[in-house]
Figure 1 (tube, one colour):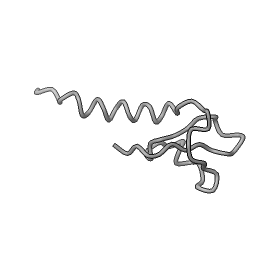
Figure 2 (cartoon, rainbow, N blue to C red):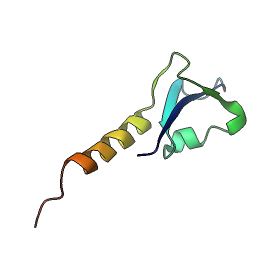
Figure 3 (cartoon, rainbow, N blue to C red):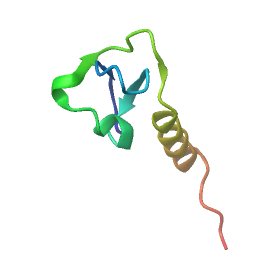
Figure 4 (cartoon, rainbow, N blue to C red):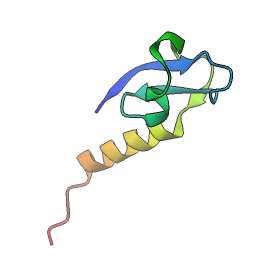
Length: 66
């Protein structure tokens, strides 16, 4: 899993979300100088949540024997 401490963007035109997965394309697009630690009172990024769910699914559900 590549969960990281939460961060959010300080750029007003970015979506008001926080990120916590280093694989997230939207989170990666936030320049380091524009990142602030924490969630900033924002909702979780749907990309980060989807990556987390996919990782959990891969770990918890064994591949089917075909």
